[in-house]
Amino acid sequence: EAGVTQFPSHSVIEKGQTVTLRCDPISGHDNLYWYRRVMGKEIKFLLHFVKESKQDESGMPNNRFLAERTGGTYSTLKVQPAELEDSGVYFCASSQSEAGGETQYFGPGTRLLVL
Amino acid sequence: AQSVTQLGSHVSVSEGALVLLRCNYSSSVPPYLFWYVQYPNQGLQLLLKYTSAATLVKGINGFEAEFKKSETSFHLTKPSAHMSDAAEYFCAVRNTGGFKTIFGAGTRLFVKA
Image: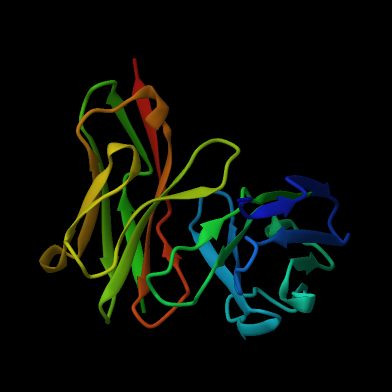
């Protein structure tokens, strides 16, 4: 069974440009999460989808970030325009249910560097 | 609010020595607790989790952790370190009614030959 995949693995862009990150969850997983780790800091929750609906986007930093999950399958996270402080590793995770003890399976992350 | 503190951003042990990675949590409700490991250029992999059953939890690769409510701790141990254990380890907490995982800052484990 394929795990969570993310594309691209790395992205280097200039301040002010737009970047779109993609996440493909494990097949059949209705729950999809985005997290971010800024250099040396904790991994922080960004948002949670159940199918195509946003359940919680309380961790989104500001309105330069837009997440979508059309059709309830893959998800995209767009940053527009990118700022220096957006640099970090963006992780996607998925789970079958949103029960508290349910294992969330993580992808390898996208390493974003904004210059 | 929930939080996780991992003591020591870097831990170095010799091959064959005991591994002890410390984690303390704060939670106003009974928590679920997790340890994840990240090997270079890979995603986070679940090592083990505590979900209110046995307080001593055994995970993959010989790791285990003990939930101690009185100490609000969930330290990760392994009796004998292998070179392949070199990685970054994350302790995390989630409340029993939720889905949002709160992570610690991570501890990078170095294993010396």
